[in-house]
Image (cartoon, rainbow, N blue to C red):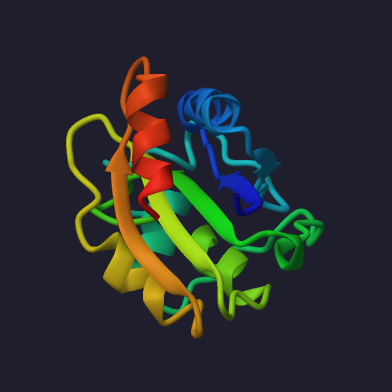
Length: 157
């Protein structure tokens, strides 16, 4: 059995709950990807073209700063990487996280929470940020997760 990490970014707490349930279900360690400056409700207002999240998501070079660089990626074979879907993809802070560590030889499987869209182009969008890794499109995990289903999914990675 490979050693697994559930690493996640959560702006409102929804993805955090899902990440904890997933980590428990598949016996994985847990790591929260935190921005150096927490997002406020105003920052997350996607209807406001000047909100922080909108500005970040419309600038391909945006790399929001991380609060820490404490993830021990080298200790893991498989990283289950979770996030809320923003603009049909992963938030920019996921690129910051992936570019901050060496994922060579790792399997990175995505999971996300969303109020209305799927994972979109997240796997393709993030692949250039973790060269040397095998990145897999993963799963949309909204609501209560089925432990049996997520165990089966993770075993196939």
